[in-house]
Image (cartoon, rainbow, N blue to C red; front, side):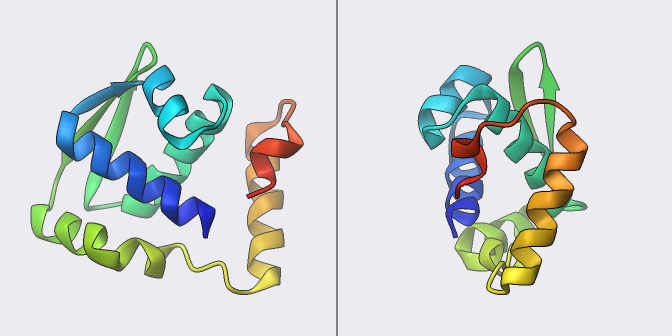
Length: 112
């Protein structure tokens, strides 16, 4: 559920501001900058045709493709796309993220 909260916090911040630095997002979700990069990758995958979050030199910008769909996601649809109720889903997802990152991962960053 913490991932859903992070997704929502980041999206709401980017909708309000339009852009944010990696450090701002790190403070917002109370996680390391490495975790922010990982969450942003996951969020982009979850958003697919709705929006894209671009990154340029530690600056993230929200580019909305479908405003109606984004409004639905912010109204509770994010929980539906990030349903981790099954322990098997959580384990598979954590393994996938660890493989994709390839580097060192802090246990605190994957604890959620």
